[in-house]
Each structure stands twice: as C-alpha cells, then as structure tokens.
Length: 101
Image (cartoon, rainbow, N blue to C red; front, side):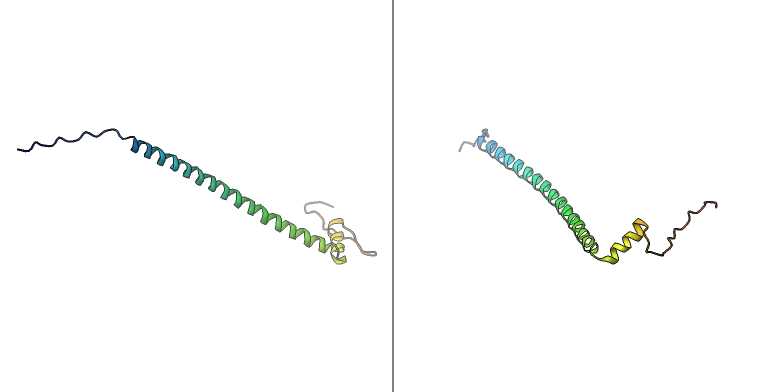
C-alpha cells in the first residue's frame, strides 16, 4: 500500500509581506499625488476666475479712458456728478418728498 501524503504546512512567506508593503507604498503615493493634483486644479480655476475679472475690469477702465477724451461725456459727467450748468441755464433739483415748505 502507498503511504498517504500528509498535507504540507504553509510556511510564512516574506515575499508576500514585501509585495503587500510595496503595493501599499505605491498606493499611498498615488493617493497623495491625486490629492495634490486636485488642489492644483482648484488653484488654477481660482486663478482663471481672477484673470477673467481683471480682464473685465481692464476693459471697463479702457472704455472709461476713451470716454474721457470725448467732450460730450465730460459734459455729461459735469452735469450729473458735479451739478454744473451752462451759462444762462437754471439748475433744477427735485425736492425731497415729505419735506414741508
């Protein structure tokens, strides 16, 4: 009769321990890089929004500068903001409601 085989005992394998440690190390590196890229993406989006706002403000200031070279615009500003009138004109200002005269 043939002797029955005894099941082999599993020995502790350092290869699998090292393999798991290497996989864990590279996984942690990959996760940290994804977090960093996410932060960089948010920063880039915020910078693009600031750039768009600055371009819009720049265009408004350019338009204002061009308008300040026109006499009709200067006259309009003088009338509306400074209350100036032409010679011979009588200034009109609406009365405040609720004021008794």
